[in-house]
Image (cartoon, rainbow, N blue to C red; front, side, top):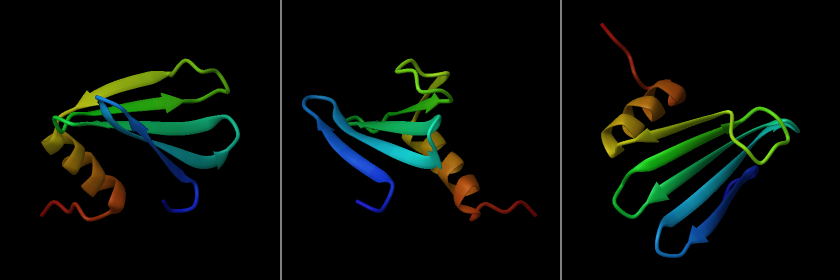
Length: 75
């Protein structure tokens, strides 16, 4: 995968993408389940416990992704 993004198969669940944010204490993990649901984990310290967890539907994930990618514009 791209530099700073690591993918791991989660048997029976889906795939996990770990995203290195360039800071030793900040990272994001996204679990894409087989049913299309996404779990977003935000880590703000070196702890293995996430600071925040969001469960997003496929549609919600697309909306958040569009905003983060800068492709969402409102007239």
